[in-house]
Amino acid sequence: MKLKFPRCNRITRSWEYDLVFRTGSRISGQLVRLLFVRTHGEEVPKIGIVVGKKQGKSVFRNLHRRKMKEAVRRLLPYFDRGYMIVLGIRKEGYFANPKDIYSDLLEVASRAGILTESYDALSLTEDDW
Image 1 (cartoon, rainbow, N blue to C red):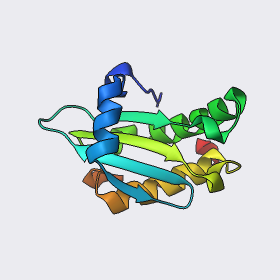
Image 2: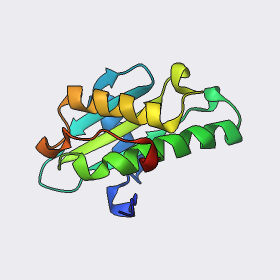
Image 3: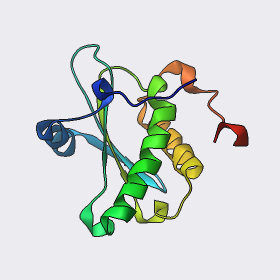
Image 4: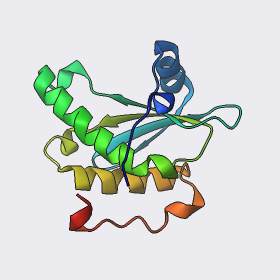
């Protein structure tokens, strides 16, 4: 299965990020931070990934962004409709591998209740990575 992160599933406007940061609920895991807000309607989930400049030079930030995108691509079909989600990485996640970030994101998203009912069998083997 080819995993994509299409434009219709991305937060692209600054006001959307602002909405999530100002009014969204926050849940932190060991490696990732998740902010989310319920939107009106049955639109596809919109996801944004943020990495602040305090976290290092652009090469370092882009590496973290790619790790988060990989985890999001694998979970994208299981996010519930009608949410705007912003993800960030914590200091503990800087040197974690993408599989650990995926596991932490799965745990945080299930605690937040933003996953569909069909996500419960999402254990990955080494062949999936």
